[in-house]
Length: 311
Ligand SMILES: [Fe+2]
Picture 1 (cartoon, rainbow, N blue to C red):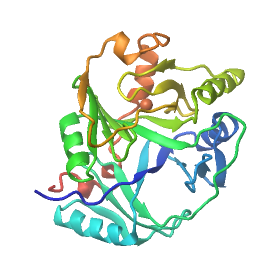
Picture 2 (cartoon, rainbow, N blue to C red):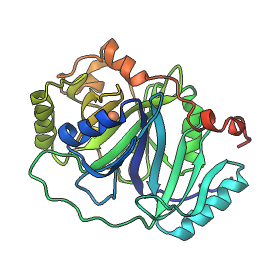
Picture 3 (tube, rainbow, N blue to C red):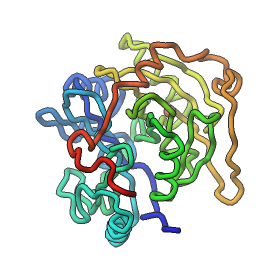
C-alpha cells in the first residue's frame, strides 16, 4: 500500500472565498478578535495570538467557498517528497513544489482533493512573535469542518493520502480526523453537496471563550448555536455567522489524544452526547442552513479538466 504523502504537523491557516470580503475583514478584526496582517483590494490576511503568520485569508468571490487549507510539514525536503508521491498517485498539483512567493513566504506544494478542495503543504513559513493579549481573542484556527457528498471517500482520501487518523465518528454522519494530539483538525459531515461547514478558532481558556461570546453580544451578534460542549472532542462550541453568512466557531479545550492508547469510538447523535452541558439545545434549521452553505466545487470550478482525474 502507498505511504501517506507527508507527515502533517498541524493546521496552519484557511482561505475563505467570500462575497463580503471588506465587511468580513472588519468583522474578524474588530469583533472576532483577529488582527490584520495585510489588507488589499478584495483580500485580507489575519492572524491570531499564536505563532502563525496568518490563520485566515479572505478572498473576494462571487460565491462563498473554501479557498484553501494549509497544513504545516517539517521541511522543504518533505514538500518535495510529497510532490513526488502526489504525482505517483496521479493527484493534480496546482502549484509547487517550490518557494510560494506568497505573503507568508515558505516552501510549499498545493494539490486538489477528490472533491475539488485545494490543500497546501507548507514548510519554512515566516516567523512572527506570539502576541500577549488581555482581551479574549483566538490563538489561531484549530479545525475546519467540511461537508462532503461521500464521507467514506473523504475519510479514505485524508487517511490514505494525508496520513490523518480517525479519532471518532458521530454515527455515520460525521468523522473527526487528527494529524497531531488535537482530537481533530478536520472533520467531515455527510451532506447534499461539498462546501465548508465552519471554521473553528481556539480560545485559550473556557473563561476567554465565554468572554469572547460576551464581546460579540455587546456588538449585537448572538450565537447561531451555543454555547455548549460537544461529546466527540470534548470541546466547547459557540457558532456565529460572519457578514457573508459563513460559519465561524469559538472553541476551547479540545481533547488531547495519546496516540498509543486512543481508541476510535462511534457516538450516538443524542442530546446528552452532542450537547454535554445541556445548554445549547438541538441545532436550529437556521444554523443547519448556514452550515450547509452553497455547493462549492472548489478548484473544479476553476479547472474543470481536473475533475475525474484518476487517484
Ligand atoms: Fe467545530
